[in-house]
Length: 495
Image (cartoon, rainbow, N blue to C red; front, side, top):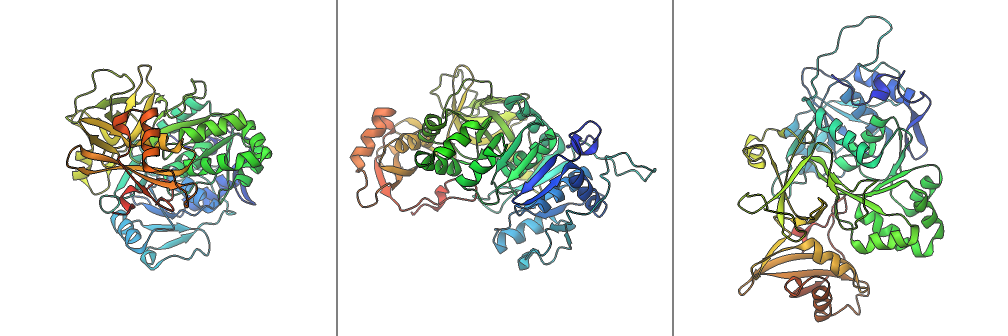
């Protein structure tokens, strides 16, 4: 078994033992302390293919628990502490973990009461399975790179959440491909405030720095002040979702110190949803920095990214990462004949970054793949002749067929957000007797007492995109429904 964290398994070639590996607020662990705590916990974990669940709070105990399990070859099921009782009960029943790892004193809901609990001690000391022992010990169970590392549950918008089984190979391939694209090294210090039950915050935001031998500083709760403090204190990279970058863009005009701190960063990365072009432009104008976007999902980890050494292009998610194959296909599965930056197709991907299947769901797994091994993402995109990919929405909720045209909701949302009277925007389609579907805009105005009119917004979009992409109906809201990652939940919009 190859270690996912060479800096921990082979300290002679890794970072100094006293280098900070993790910091959560005023709590931190060096690499030596992390190896000791994870080693102690690893000795208490089950073998034989059993899984462990982790109560994934924003705390060092979560990182220690995940590292210990992965180094011991035990698959991890990260749990969202905000999950409702029904969802949590489904995940625990479906994944059947042997243990639930938590921080000391964590208050758990009744749905978790049936799983034996182990509290993580971050000050314990032990030996990780991959480290050379002083005296011979019994060998650990052999683990293959195709064996499961994580079982991460999807959002379950069309039914109960499904557990995507991510092999060790996929975690390593994604993190190494991102290291290539972002010039990510052990000298980098990452700051973020993302939740740790999801791919973005856990795999990229915690496991990524540890695989490189670098450091991660978790904000606990995101704030522009916290970002500025960490970037001024030596952090080199920032990960966030569009909601976070929007708040940074809003704060920049009145906070020159924030602009200076962001300008000092080596890399600003946004993901989990599209960052509006308007926010890209505001951040670049104030800081001189561009925000890099990347594209991935639970089942595939990362597929594409704008490269650190690539051409800046706001509104795109860059080019396929090393090792990833990507194509766009028509509704019948036929690949697009050419990439012209306008033709819309569904993204399909192949590569070492892919999951192996949905836990206990062979039917869903079979339906997700083509006969020749391409994963059907359900995301719609256009691709420029030079390979850059621009996401236009989800096939199920964001592809609108109106008047014979295929229209992606994402580009209309970006256009609406460029209007000075629009604070937030979402676009959907609804049945229309003449057009098949008409474009509907859901708008949160800057001034709810004097919102921009329907004709004004339709004209605004038509001038920037094309007349057939203009909204035919505009509905005004006080706020758009969003999930924990900042994604707009279109299925929760009023009917």
